[in-house]
Length: 121
Length: 112
Picture 1: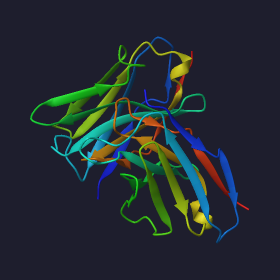
Picture 2 (picture 1 turned 45 degrees about the vertical axis):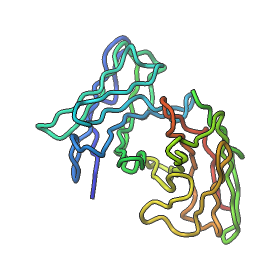
Picture 3 (picture 1 turned 30 degrees about the horizontal axis):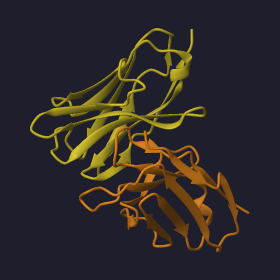
Picture 4 (picture 1 turned 180 degrees about the horizontal axis):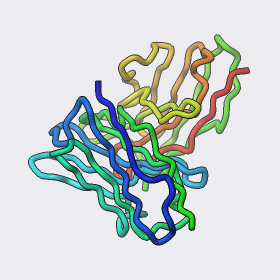
């Protein structure tokens, strides 16, 4: 039974960096059949895929062009987790952020609980 | 980017009646491997989205058989044969053939 548990701040100031973590239980971040995604949801942008990482003999990273210059997704095999860093935040980054797993080609079959992030001074 | 367009925006259904949601993609979702990478999710109030269907018509584990998916190429449909109160939520389609992965705008299903 795979579970994803998110953690991170709910309020971040403009121009600062958002850091969120997704702890994995019941699977391995270095699984050769899994992928690990970050998605956000806001009233103005709907559900927006931000990026993912996955391990296939080496680590791979895919990012949405809309955030590519500002985003970093990392994996931590020692703690079996992955993380999101999004820098140079603006109020437009205010959203609920989710992590989600891909199980081979079954995309986003398990989701974290979501983290409401507000960008405000 | 592939644009996913869902209709209708909202649906009010009497319990026990059927419901149908359309999703159209701006490009074909048929891959050269023969698989069509179209997924359906439902987001119930206050919850994260949850997977319903993958590869057009395969029901995810635990999804009731009153849910079915069909379609090909660029036109897809999610059907609920007999809507129940627990089916209330916003339904989203997702394309998985091309990065960035993109979602439809959502269809809100309510009970009359």
